[in-house]
Picture: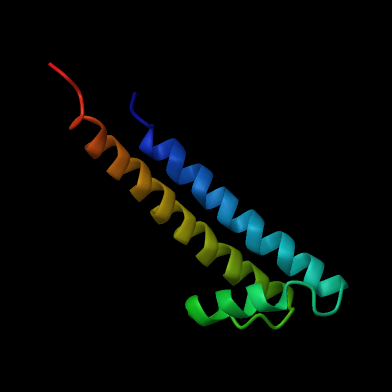
Length: 89
C-alpha cells in the first residue's frame, strides 16, 4: 500500500492551518488561551509575532499550512520509499 503524497500534503497543510487558526482565534476572545503554543509558533515562523491581531494570525496560518504540507508530504514520501524494502519476492 502506498500513500497519495499530494493528498497527505494537503491534509497536513489544512491541519496545521486549522490548529494555529483555531488557537489564535480563541486567544483573541479568551485572554491567555494557548499562549505558550502561539509563542512557540512565533519563535519558529518568521514574521509571525502572536500579537492577537487578525493580519498576524493570517501570517501564522500561512506558515503553519506550508509547514504541515512539507511535514506530512515528506512523511508520506518516506513511507512510500521505505515500504518497498520489506516485501518478499
